[in-house]
Image 1 (cartoon, rainbow, N blue to C red):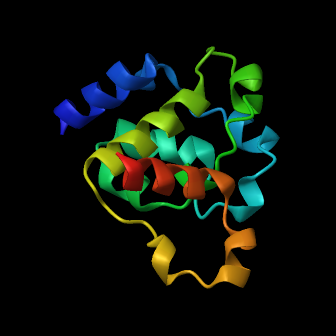
Image 2 (cartoon, helix red, strand yellow; image 1 turned 90 degrees about the vertical axis):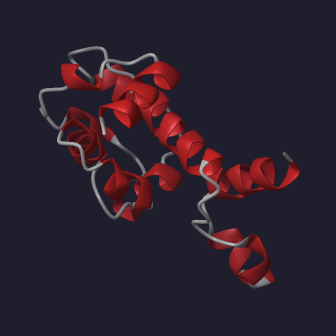
Length: 125
């Protein structure tokens, strides 16, 4: 499990263990209402070795990478980079969160844009 946590740290350049769960990232997140788990909970899942739950959450796809969490973090952790690292790992493992072909055209506008972009990256190599 440490291997995947190291991979997240390498991709993001962030020290996941620096987070002490103050919750300021979640309190300031403009997308938190659409997330199934809070941003600080994503980091906590990684810290305790439950990375698979973080990878299955929709929070990593809803994150708009607006950097509000980074601005508010007293430890200087850029959670946006960690979310992007989780998306990259998810895509590298070829795990489908959603298959774009199964989404009805009228529902495409309801999806987070990052999910569509990530799917197109994955499908075009």
